[in-house]
Length: 313
Image (cartoon, rainbow, N blue to C red; front, side, top):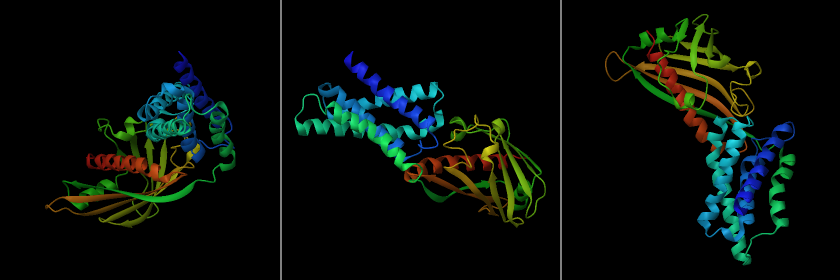
């Protein structure tokens, strides 16, 4: 019973912190070092410290805080405090860091030869520290990084035929298109694109589910060989229910800048190798981790774009 109450208390601590960060969004950043790194460390430390001698090993100290992380995940999603997509991406890091915090508390107890682990004062300090540092951090820890992702696909058509498809005035994604990782995680699926003129300065509007849209301006035009599109996003015009603010394309943390199609004859006669290169920007305090997910999802989205192009009549 005591263990259950302790786990519930630490869960409440995590949920309340998420609510505070949401309420004071102008001062506190959820996508911050304090929230994503320090809070799970504090959750793990507090869980193991309060459980005391009921933690029997370092493995137990590492994995027991995961129960709290799972509980926080469920409460914040069910309470519409956080989007499922964000949690899917951040949970591995969040859980591992909470485990490290638990191991640190267990090691502290062993070194100090304590029966019950760190005292209330030490636990309180660890739990309050992330909140105090978050006010000082704000958005100062964010760094911008420009990345590229590339995908290739061989079409059973010659470059002229593929080029004609790229210049289609109306481009629709087949309804039977295969589900992708991005769509499974909740990213809106592409529906159609409309092009006003196929030349430099031409504008293609890309429409997605739930009202999401992008403006793609033809920046470079080399008939039959290369098409470069500058991507303009309008986050203020996207309904708030479409994408979580932390992964909103065109928002503070993610933006797509350019798509480049390169066409060349394939190794077999009558085929065309299409290379799609997308340039995008991420801006977080932990780009090393964000990069892993963004590269995976962008690869998946490029695959979907090429498949839709290949499926056009």
